[in-house]
Length: 394
Length: 223
Picture 1: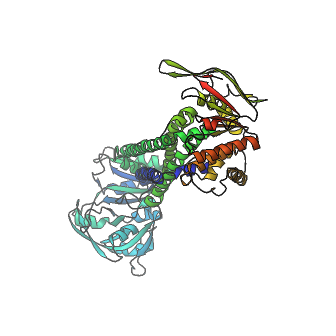
Picture 2: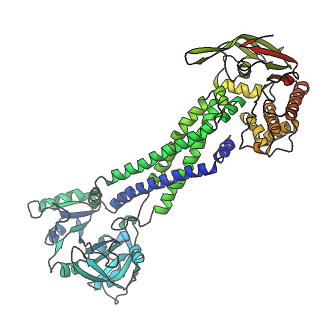
Picture 3: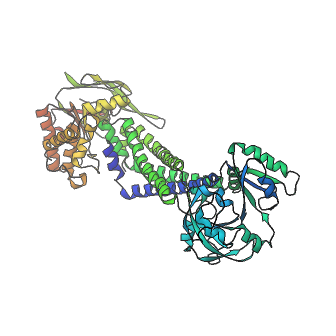
């Protein structure tokens, strides 16, 4: 019986191929769009429950003073405090090639030490000390005020080399910012991203802020993550009546809030994905109905030979399911293996992620498309009266 | 013993508001192993009667008993199963599946019974050899002549070894020579293999090959 289904599938090879290809493309797009949502989700994962972020309560783009640092550090349960300022520069040779840059201070690399590993570095003089908890391979970075650390993918993408002095054009902080690449990192935690450049906050402060020290955000490492809510309350209550007041949250909540800035984009992506799937459903259903209508008299013959209505129903549904499931598998797995891990998103988002749950959802959708697109023609074929079927001449 | 017993069968069709009475209380008894021809003008109800005997349509009232089984009230899967085991159907236009070879076409009815692939192919090959097409197993319908296609259709009808063969204008689309070959084959199946054959035909020459002729007119037997 299955052979009969296969033979019918290859009856009109071009039509089968085109239908399958349309389902493949649709599911590829659906899973890729789903992958964008997954990537946003992934970007939240960089946030750890054991790390907190302190920012200006009014807005992320408003500064908080460096003077807060000591007071935050003195809150019981806070292990390390690091400064992290968004720089927003551009590569003057590739202004459209966006990537994130952060000005960070000494403890930063210790706080995030578990999320990356240094894979290339410039040699420093022997015996040069690095802050506690920091990879000694970063010694050359700590020695030089204009040094920077870049992600491996960014290095490859830009064609940079270790030891090379590059220039970043400031947009928020005008002027040219020469920096020397002293280390290259590989992200152990995929969501940490490999297209980010880190440089010294001191460099930013002295060159771009006239020696002043406003801070974008403080990143805190806690000695005991279970104390997070107490620490949050302690910090924010301390600055409640100060100008500016602070808003402290777990890094995860901070990242989630960042993603929420995309507003309805995830919703729009979902709608577009479903619209693509729905249009393919119509195409597949139409193709199946045409294919079945052409074979009306054959179904009459099969029934005359003793094939039951149920057998005919199963044949048609199986035929539709093979087309859509085949196309769906190709599209969904194609998205998983071609898009997942690629740097399509770039910037401060981690590499593209296409979760297996998205792939499985895509495959389930393909099966449902198959069932729905095959259902109506299958019902038509199974309910066909033999005498009516044999009377028709196509 | 009668192989086919039709009793007081009425068959009506609805066309818009009008009710069309195609068979009007028809009764007919065909003995086991007979070869009968149903003749009559177009619209007389010949094919309808054949369809009722074959279980591909159901009477509005009356009984149709084939080899002791009353199929008039059978429906759905049980009727389909009965058809596959009890009836071989030969169409005027052969109705072979164009994407299947001659062998695969003949194998079709055997897909419905539990049987190994090898056994299925063996039986289909035997059936094709019986109709003289042992050398055309791998040919597709488009590679065969009309007469050969009809012989494949006959092989398909008899491969599951049914007691009754129904033929609806089996020579209607054939030239004289091919028609003669098909009639010879039906004759042989009747005589050598004791198949009960009911053949609808317009052709008086074809009807002469049957042991008995029935004439239908306006839904009733006229003789």
